[in-house]
Length: 255
Length: 243
Image (cartoon, rainbow over all chains, first blue to last red; front, side, top):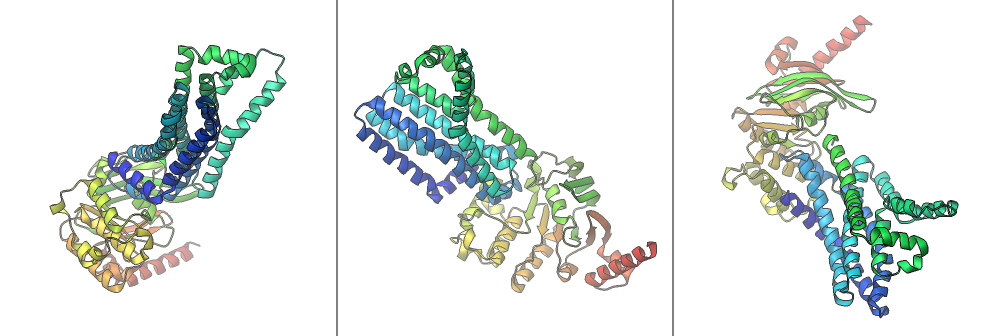
């Protein structure tokens, strides 16, 4: 497993795209913290950038990489290697490279400027989000043979999680604003890993007071140990489930 | 060494393999021939576990290969179109394969590596190679680990005449070591000196599986190409008679 992971990471670093991603994150984070004098404000600004950029880069880059390394994977499958192991190694390589790029790009400025609980939560959420979207990309790439369609699907998935989902939630919120749907909103927010991360971080920076009654309900749920545990499990589920489905599919796929 | 039992494979609506059963023994050089799209490559990929048949099993030394992977240690495979990561150099690809197979350096078969002169090209990236050089790398990899079974899918396509002769010499040398060699090719003259058995695939079915000698005797032809032409002509006649 380590061997293939090593080759995947070496291959990723050779393409330099991951390096550029890390540098861009680094520049963005440093400029954000230099503009905002307050650490928490900096974290909020960074949060909005991160929730937009990290899923997009993770899912699109991974899908493109998976289609481009179809030959590599085909070559490996004809060798005495377990299929599941090949697929897991490719995932580990991609997740490792993108997670590391995020840790360097955002981690260094956070440690320097905002070494707080909110900063750490932001860092943890960012790494988890990277992994979640690599996992979703693996699923999209294994289900669809055609490269153009596959990349299209991954972009659509990103659009859904980053924009459409929120629009949908807002729509529901206004339609049912006469009813007590705050608890329901917690359940709905679990359907989107980006939303989970956003709520987790916002609650850490005491901005929940601005969110009115819903904020209080969120605080009641996410603020407790149980709430945090459930949220963590749901995020992990978002990471494991797409990967598991893709693994099962890859095991039976014709190459 | 390899037994194929009632394999059927369908891609969408296209039935590629129809109930194929074959028995391939060691020490033979089997020529797998047939028109384009007759299922030769799919059959090979089913043996390698790259294509999952809808029904039937492949036995390697008496054991089913379904979802197994260890057995591929004993197979050297040269694909029809060798596709490698564009960014890697020839040296890196060779190193990676050695790394995967974990075979001690001194037991490696480096004959083809030397006769093809790959040493001088170790630093070249796979993406910049010509089709023929890529074939040379594929051939080198297939033979490198002394496999008991060699599966060569169109090995001479794209190779220059000198390299073709070198590869044929190597195949003959391996044949004498009691290995099973499966070759598909459209260049029947290449197969004349190599093959001991002939399998003719037609529309996903093996039409016949005979030793080369029997085939030549039955048709009275001295070359494989002529023998096949005669068999085909007979078949056309049969079809006309039935119609």
